[in-house]
Length: 65
Image 1 (cartoon, rainbow, N blue to C red):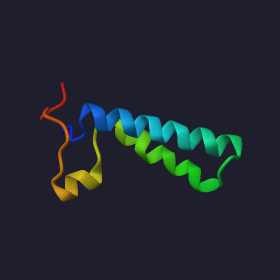
Image 2 (cartoon, rainbow, N blue to C red):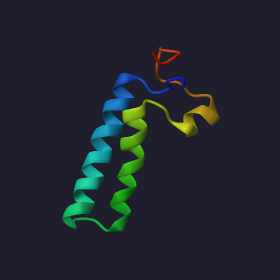
Image 3 (cartoon, helix red, strand yellow):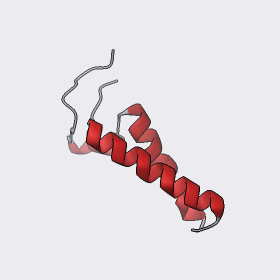
């Protein structure tokens, strides 16, 4: 799997994902807060399928390992 998410992008995705999930878990926002799972997962795996389709890469690394 190739990486297509850089460090800054990754950190922001993880933070936003965790905040949304925490807000949904505490009932501060509605069920839509669970959408935070998506940016959290893409940040953790450093791969975004939408970036891949659009040919976007914010990372200089090309391969895993």
